Image (cartoon, rainbow over all chains, first blue to last red; front, side, top):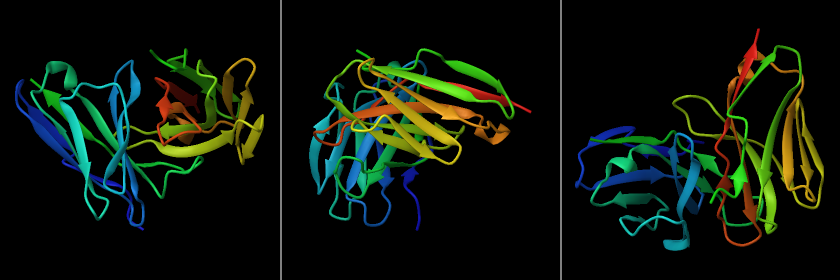
Length: 114
Length: 112
């Protein structure tokens, strides 16, 4: 079974631009979560989608948004990029939302904002 | 506010010895705890988990211990192998929703 895939793997943008990242979960997985990883901060939860609805949201500004499609694929959008948005963005999928459901991570998209 | 903390950014251990990675949390609502392992240029991979109703869970060379009163968990790797060299993240989630809180990671180096 194919794992979680994320595109693109690397991205360079300039301040003020916007970016869209894509995540394809493992087949059959309906929950998709997004995380931002920066040095010294670990993985910070952005949001979680399940059945095309945002179920949880972390403490990030409104410039960070996302959506999930009927095939469970998800996109994350960051508008008006800032230098501090440079990070590794990880997507994780799980079969459902039950306690104990293991999340499977993709390789991430490394975003550099200049 | 970091609700899950890994206070040791790095750890070096000789091959064959025990590796002990520690994690502390502040939120008493956390009900389920996990450890992930991450190699460079890859996403984290699930290693082992433990429910708050247990105090120990074992899987091969990996054992996770949970001390709820101290809000502390640890991962023991015995014996350590060079292939275990990676960054280890602990994570926790409350029994509501699907939101995971991660620590900042501990970089483990196993010296041959």
